[in-house]
Structures are given as C-alpha cells and as structure tokens.
Length: 87
Image (tube, rainbow, N blue to C red; front, side, top):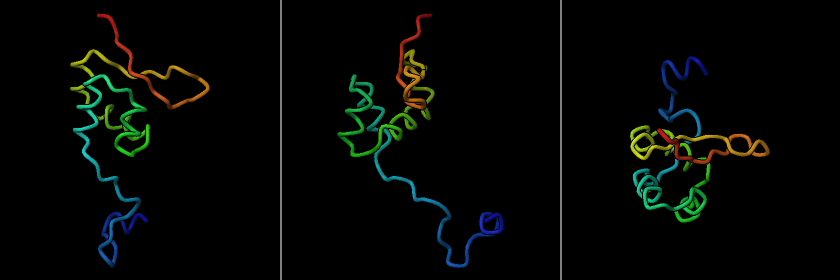
C-alpha cells in the first residue's frame, strides 16, 4: 500500500473508496436556512455523518454563525449537534 500511495498503481486507478459526489455548498446553504442535519441528509440522500463532516470542514461557516459542534449524547458517540455558544 505504501508503494502504491507513493508511486501510484499500474492501472492508474485511485486508492480507496471514491468520494461522494454532491454539492457541498448546498449542504451549507440548507443549514444556513435552519434545516436540521437529519433533514439535510434525507433531502440530499447522504448520510448524517457526511453532512456533519461537510459542516465541520467549513470553519468560516461555523465561526460566522457562532456555532461549535459538541457531542450531546454519550449513547451516540460521534453524533454531533451544533450549539450556539454565547460570547
């Protein structure tokens, strides 16, 4: 695997699972309209974790909205909910 990552594969195919193709800006826009993470995932036919990852990868969006992601339920580790932090 190290050699393939460093030098590529014989066929030229990428290594690993292909990335999902969807409009990441649309995820951010829908969240900005107040839609829940679950509803965004349903509407765009992607997973909840994918929506969370997109939102977390956009620090400017989260900081501008005054949001941070916290794990709100210990029964579901890794499920993050945006909460507003007071200054």
